[in-house]
Amino acid sequence: MTIKLKLMKKLPLFLLCILLFISCKEQPTKENITIERTPDSFAIVIHGGAGGIKREYFTEEQQEAYAEKLQEALDAGYAVLENGGISLDAIQVAINIMEDSPLFNAGKGAVYNSDGNQEMDAAIMDGKTLNAGAIAGVNHIKNPILAARLVMDSSAHVMLSGKGAEIMAAKNGIEMVDSSYFFTEKRMNQLKKIQGKEKTELDHTAFLIKNELIDDHKYGTVGAVAIDKNGNIAAGTSTGGMTNKKYGRIGDVPIIGAGTYANNLTCGISATGTGEYFIRTVASHEVSSLIKYKGFTPKEALNEVLFNQIGPLGGEGGMILLDKNGDVYWDFNSTGMFRGFKKSDGTSKVEMFEKTE
Image (tube, rainbow, N blue to C red):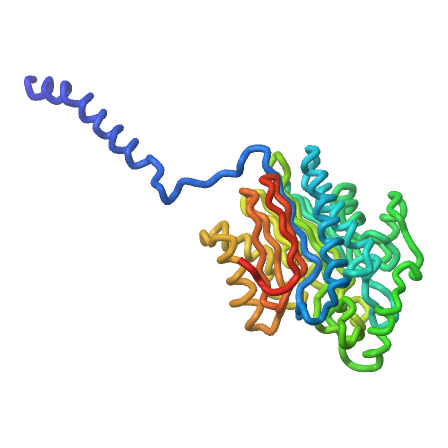
């Protein structure tokens, strides 16, 4: 009886020691403390294509033209975010501006396929809901990113292609244009130069100094990723594909997880480059998965996919990334990439050529 009483008296002390032990073990260490996004902060990052973009290929006037258009797209998307708009609207506005410019291989500047027509692709994704929309192989939609948004918001589908996508777009008031809208002499000259050959050209280059018909120096897709004041991420991409591509060819852009991906738990990504290789590696989703499951930093994940997965297969291009904390990253295994970002902390940058720290 005496032994039992002694044990009962010591029991509360024993339980208290256990609780203290568990409490101490559950305290976060320096290593596992998560850095959180600054409340109400926002940011946008864009690209206008990657490839053999070298300074010597462009006159000062041409460099200024690209820089000004990239800045215009950034400013427009940033204004949406600054006024409390959502990330989906911000990237849509930024991409619209690049689609309306003949400088980029998207919308107005889309290249010709082997039949002498444009076949454009686009995709958009909401990182909050994982909802997504994409269109592929369209010929008459002035701004393909608007049609991709329509598929996401107003249908039960993720991707529509060709005639079906155009019928839906027209019925819902999206601006349709005649094929002549997309005509540019430079694009037509590019097609004529290689027509009849079993060859495709991965996008245009913008007015190369020595030979404006050279076409394999740049992969022209355009894209944007944004995070709004509520911390929601969105990503979008738009492209005209490859010059002289076979009728019906679809690249990585409209394939969710390949050229476009967004997830609030990790990041948003838009890619540009040799689409077949980004499809085969499911590049954008792979970057997100490395961050989520392997603990890679965004910088490490981009490097792994671009240089250790896509590169060895023969692929070339680049990716922009905006993570859940609002931090901007980009990388490319090509010579250059048209790119820029603008953040609510006052930092902003537009770059075109080799990497800088």
